[in-house]
Image (cartoon, rainbow, N blue to C red; front, side):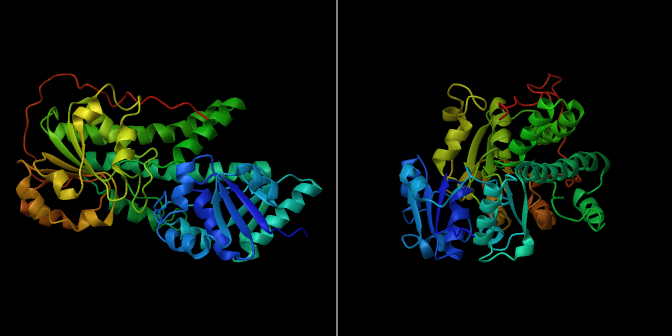
Length: 427
């Protein structure tokens, strides 16, 4: 069997960087070169400050960088010298979750390798299997044809996104009836046929994979003349959009039907905790809806750089003209963001938000002071927060027994829950 001694990975992003770093770490006899056209990104991989944040990644990179792990912009030479080129030779889809990517790579549920059903294709499949067998049990390495491999990736993410949209749809019903979505999720999750994973109601899913893969599935179904299947999976995206708009509408409704010129603290901008990735983050959409209503946003995230937040919010589909310059301030800590705010909106489930000094925050906020918990991170603190004086609003549960009354203006809101955000071009 052909033995792989040199690997080239094209793309030094959230997948290529961590994946090939772990391969180099686990296979010290294999030389792994990660290449990218982005010189600044490659320079970052070769520096003490990596371009992405992922728990455990820095230690893995530093253990083998310069030994058998290299980052380069010399793409042509790396391809010529490689025994195997990731992305362009085989179908080897990743099933990583950001925030736990290193753990997922070192101890995967499965490794999926797809290849052509030709002698050459099967030799390539077996050669890549031999690489993973350095640390993954053979029974966890699945080999399929290329189509099965690629569809497995799309279907896996579509099923996970579907579960999130399903529980989020029930969260709206819970708020209308007085049920608690956490209690409902626990009850149905104990059913072994269903299980308890991905039943956490929130302001909506984000990240680079879920929406992209579901929309790819929709596009594929449309292209293959399966309109009913396409509509089914499109509804998963539509429900996610609805959940975001519903949460933004609830903020505006609670703040006496207007947020114009009001200061709102946004805590968390990454799409989930333990990552600096903001792609398709619900925070972007919540910020957009509030900016459209004239709110002044003060945003804090412990891992997302100021420049990234500004770039995301300055996208033509998110803001117009000088909206970001006029309405957005990036804060250096959560207390600064909350100082003088009318409301605190939690959009990312960073653990640190459970440990903030909320009495200190309340003293500096305008009254009545509101907290909108879009991630259910403060569930155990509701009584304490209400005693301090906060009005609490959260996903899938009625918390505040005494809502401060307001008189609706009768004006038509500037956005409707029925109007979904513009779809991005499908790949």
